[in-house]
Image 1 (tube, rainbow, N blue to C red):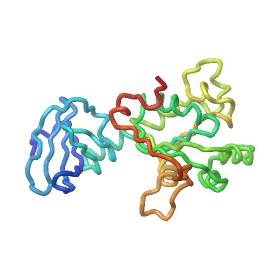
Image 2 (cartoon, helix red, strand yellow):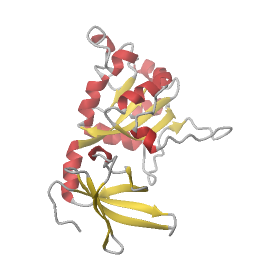
Image 3 (cartoon, one colour):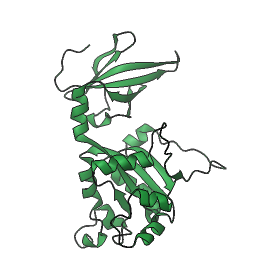
Image 4 (tube, rainbow, N blue to C red):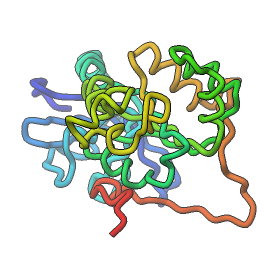
Length: 260
């Protein structure tokens, strides 16, 4: 294995070998200083790929749950392999929850295009909220007219996003702008709420306000498979429908939401 430990990240990773029908597990070493990668096979205890430059991969592509393509192999990152990588990346990267409200679903493509300029979308789901969902997630906590807010958020489909980015929550708040859109109309139209919102209630988007809320909201909307909570109901009817898959290269090229 590598002996150069300066500025090196190590991840637990896996790759399904379709020819051998085997799920192979690796340590994936990434050196951001020169964009080189090394793979160490955990079963054979041998180097699977010697340290080499891998074109098209950047430091921002490495996070838990990411799939990176290394010489035509889709390698999934499933965990941190050492404390340095965990501490270094978890202090830089934040996962948080964002909700696109019912009245801007028709502008979803445009908004997602803006979001992907700054953040990774690591989970996404279109849902139908109930009054219980709205109250349990405290979307009405600081709202004077709680019933109007409940009626608004349950009036049609919403889109929930799990986003990942450096100092993500603070940067999201900068991108979204103040909750009361009227405060920004006169100064800028580059913020999401200034572009798409109308007032403090109809302000187009919601985002986690701190790490604690982010963890609670992500667990509620994107629960793990073992959780008793299955999350809000999706809009999928699974009848007379089809499935559309947006491939990784299209996402990386920021073509998602591109109307051209």
